[in-house]
Length: 230
Ligand SMILES: CC(=O)N[C@H](C=O)[C@@H](O)[C@H](O)[C@H](O)COP(=O)(O)O
Image 1 (tube, rainbow, N blue to C red):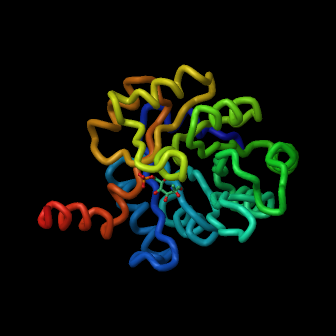
Image 2: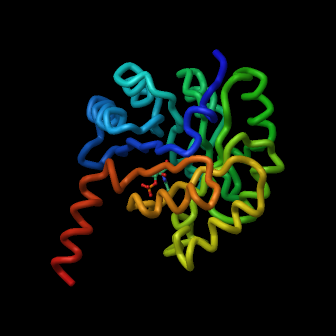
């Protein structure tokens, strides 16, 4: 396979279709239909969690995929594709990109991310690797480790960045990320309007991933209900 992912998604929208166990839409069938809706609307790629969801979405849409596998280990806060085992399983689906968390914490079994990357590169030379980062320090780490794409995925979602949003202060954090690396940046995390998506692209992001604002009806409805109760 020749990997055309970067060209395909340039300046475009990627939709994240994810529902964890416990969420109302947890089902590979439903995620595949969500992905089909995103495709029919013009999304050029899908971000998906777990081997079964990735396979269902591939079958339904034939769109390129950013694949990940969320797993909680007792000895680590890293949960997005945290070990070589999950990286390998996701890469083996044929997903064009494997995303994994790069947030500075110790990985499960004290695994070395550098070693895992080396191994995955050897086993899956065509697969691109995306770093899901939270801070500028993570962006530098990911750049130095040779990731092909850097996502702002975890900004606002870790203890250290709680309540932060990459759109705060006229996108100050995102601007700093774009300055800190030459690796293509994917804006991801709490992008909930078309206007914010366009602003991220105008600033120089390679593409934008939108998740909950499109594919999590519980979250969307909660926003409306919160407005009623305020
Ligand atoms: C922090 C974390 O675990 N993020 C996950 C990463 O894959 C997904 O749950 C998010 O939905 C995705 O990143 C898109 O972001 P948002 O839903 O904010 O548009």
